[in-house]
Image (cartoon, rainbow, N blue to C red; front, side, top):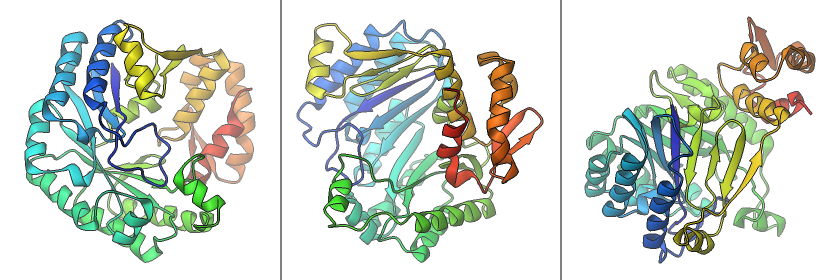
Amino acid sequence: MAGIYIHIPFCKKACNYCNFHFSVNQQALPSMVDAIIREAQLNQDYITEPIETIYFGGGTPSLLKNDQLTSIMSTLQDTFVIASNPEVTLEANPDDITEMKLQAWKEAGINRLSIGIQSFFEEDLIWMGRAHSADQALNCIQLAQHAGFTNLSIDLIYGGPTLSDEHWNQNLAKAIELNIPHLSCYALTVEPKTVLAKKINEHILEDIDVEKQSTHFNMLLTKTAEANYEHYEISNFALTGKRSKHNANYWSGKHYLGLGPAAHSFNSVSRQWNIAHNTLYIQAIQQGTIPFEIEQLTKNQQINEYIMTALRTMEGIDLVRLTEIGNEEVVFRLKEEAAPFIQDERLQHTDNYIRITHKGKFFADGIAAALFQL
């Protein structure tokens, strides 16, 4: 089984912290849809397995008109082998969600929504530069549930300067009270070339408080555990049976095809990514060419890819699988590198798995880097 990701690179406005590829000028949206459809047709041989997940990300896919969304879905169904009952996710902003749109999305085949709430408090949303209000953050969830969307995910951001411990606790309590089955929670990160980075560098805004983020992360782990959410990946929490299949496929190394500018594709032995330029992408596709760069993955890169993704999951690194990707010597070296982290209880070695502990979760990226095979 495999997945397809569709990148819709348009937004109403730029959020301060975002470094994804997008444009606030939506004039090219119709041409972009045509190009994505054509790219799918040009790439029909990239994925030979049945498609079990489809994910509309961005940018802001909820900006798509009904006929544009339907056209993309129809093309995917005509071009690829789609598994029965696939998971089809649409990322949506609260201010785009209406009763009419929700009905249209269901008719187009969308059965899962990922809503960019970020916070239920107005001051946080204003600081982030979000287009929606706190009232819309709450109302859109109720609209989606009333429309019959039972597979819902919301994004929340913690550790920002306007978010107090009390308000973070209330954000989590509200999500749990609303019975949201899936939560994606991210520490606010200062990415290069963003408005946030520029303002911090110019001392217009204060820098990120790492201690505050650590406190919020521990609050997150406690609150979600009390509410019976499964912490199945560092930033993701799900009630029973509500994991994101699409994202779980990324972490388990399954193949995926990315469509649209800046979209990535992966087939185990190579990774490729489309040009991050809307105009050049559209022009190339119109000429029958997919504008991408490709990297053939070395054996060590394949090993490191698995270590990095597996360590972020609750299952951890499967040493049997790591032997299949590499060899017994790779597993021996990994155990040696993992020993200090096991000793200080940031990792644990149980049976044939090495997993990150509660204590180590906030340091997952650094621990993974220390385990990489050079």
